[in-house]
Amino acid sequence: MGEIAQVLPHDEHNRTLIENVHPAGYRNPAPAARYNLVVIGAGTAGLVTAAGAAGLGARVALVEKNLLGGDCLNVGCVPSKAVIRASRAAAEVAGASKFGVEVPPGIKIDFARAMERMRAIRARLSQHDSVERFTKELGVDVFLGEGRFTGEDAVEVNGARLRYRRAVIATGARAAEPPVPGLSEAGFLTNETVFSLVSRPRRLAVVGGGPIGSELAQAFQRLGCDVTLFHDRAHLLEREDPDAAAIVQQALLRDGVRLVLDAEIFRVERKGEEKLLRYRAGGGASDCVVDEILVGAGRQPNVEGLELERVGVAYDPKSGVRVDDRLRTTNPRIFAAGDVCMAWKFTHAADFAARIVIQNALFPSFSGGRKLSTLNMPWCTYTEPEIAHVGLYEHEAVAKGIAVTTFLRPFSEVDRALCDGEEDGFVKIHVRKGSDEIVGATIVAQHAGDMISEVSVAMAGKLGLSRLANVIHPYPTQAEAIRQIGDLYNRTRLTPFVKALFQGWLRWTR
Image 1: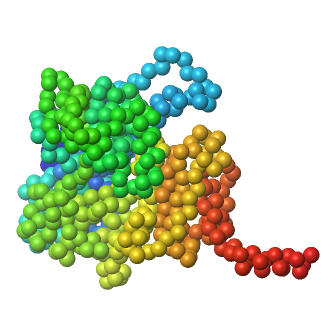
Image 2: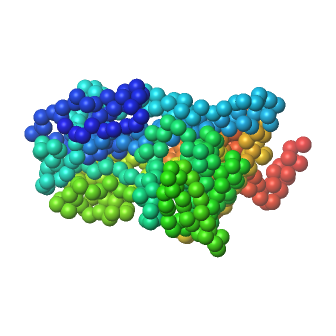
Image 3: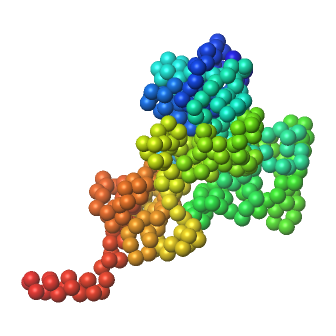
């Protein structure tokens, strides 16, 4: 029996969550003589692998030491998006006057209710990842406890020996702790603990200006916190398209987030109930006093305790388990998927990596092996506006020796975006120079994450940009911007020579 996980606060919603994803009364089953697949880790990669393999008739054991559902359900995608939605409601009320809606004074944000709503949604969704569903509906043997490799064909969990033909490492990753003196002693929050808050921190420092830090800094500022965001680079979201990142950076500033860029936090001290961050930025040293510190500066793979050396699986403490393009580790009987081994640290990436593992681990002779590199992987940062991307950035294309032509449609020229008051954004699509082959795209919009899929479909189906000009969109929608970019491309095909031919034909047919 695994150690019962603790999730705070101890309310009805979290009791439901625990009952689903790590029930107190659960007893591990007697192991089968041998499993087709033993999966260690029950986050997205592990759950999809286990469910998919069992659905195909495989005998599967799933091992989890904490909560089924992993980061996505418990401390990642689900709770963060619920909090972000609450913060957007607060921003909509605050900005209602620009639409002619006057909000009476005295409107307040109930932080505790917003967080309770998040916990209720999480509890409701947890049934899909529950122990009961996986054992009774899907036929998976679920083992709660810490798994470790004990031999070439065995994993041990709480003294039980699970023998396998193939194994999958899907243990995920956790928030990395910056090496700042005094930070641990002062105490800090990560994505694993911030969603346990029941009262609003009046002053909040966010460390890290990547996707997690930017999303939560904006969300908590909108929910009434006084947020200071520290980032060690010159601008936020430095991995994104610079034009896109600049729009989001300005949005955070408009919301009231204080940005400290090119910052080096060199010490943290605790002063009673307060926390003092000492930092350098702009050529000088300064202090910042806050009530809580939220760290969102990178991820660290969960490789400890698995005894990977025993089974010849190579790994790095920072980058995780080493895998090839078919997600095989250096031990051909063991595969890996998700944050523990991949640069793409997204739930949907883990999902589709799991599908590759199922095929390559169970049916390699039928498929010849599916490859991770064949995936067109979109992603989205859920700030407001959102940034969504798929394929190559322009600088990546140049580095690969691919000459590109870029087409841009700003939302200031899109009717629906003007009506919505959401003109700060754009659609940008790169095509291989001299053709309409799409090599990458970035969208900055309120719902960019929903819009990017149209471009992803085109890339996956090898449809060129000219074909997108033929996709009819309802009018008015913001997604029309994608079709309009297709029109922009088609106009480039109307060369002076082609135009002269058309004019000649029209004169002759008068």
